[in-house]
Image (cartoon, rainbow, N blue to C red):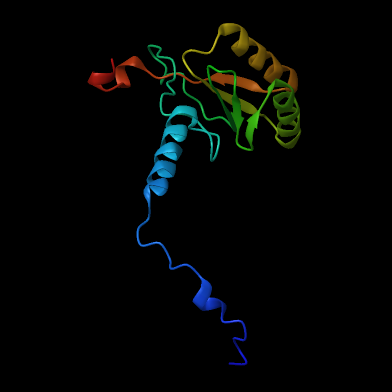
Amino acid sequence: MIARPLDLASRLRPPPQGTGALFYVNVGLLGLFFSLFGSRFVLAPGLGVDFQLPQQPGAQAGAAQASNVISVLRSGQIFTDEGPADLGQLREWLKARAAREQHPSLLIRASSEVTLSELVEIEGAAHDAGFRVLLGAEDRRSLPAEAK
């Protein structure tokens, strides 16, 4: 009696017996919002599943190993090994990397939809920093039959 002087437990409502329809409405609305307004890059930015390198005959013959790699998407996003960067941040990243290496080389993996003007601007920034620039491409002969 001393531990429960007001006897509050007897005055409480009993817990609801079902989960109620509101729970299902909330789950449905969350699913709707994620499907309509969701993004592939919500958790961590990265390359999408539709990223494709341009195709060029003899691309494997001119292949070389690069000391640094960046990826460029058609939306203008540039991804380094440190994460996404804009063109100004890329210039600083390139200068810092060029200072660390003897003969720096840069592989640009640009999506096939990236415009030439963006590609030339990125390549110019790499040349200004002292990089030897390589452009990534896939050899048409090495593609599977269903992708041709």
